[in-house]
Image (cartoon, rainbow, N blue to C red):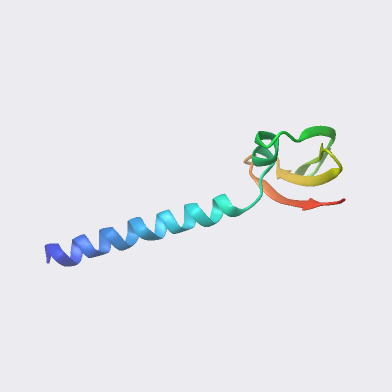
Length: 78
C-alpha cells in the first residue's frame, strides 16, 4: 500500500513540475522586462492592462489580467 502511495505522490510531483515548466515557456511581461525591454506605452482596459515594449527594433504587445497580474498573452508587432 505504501508503494502505491509513494508512486501516487511521485506522479503528482511530476505533474506539478511539468505544469510549472510549461507555464515558464509562455512569454510574460516580467520575462521581457528581464531581457531589457522598455515599456513605451501602457493603458488600462477592462479586464486587461496593455503594454507596448521595445528593445532595439522589436516591439512587443502584452496584455496582463487586472484580477491577478498574470500575463494573458504577448505578441511581437515588429
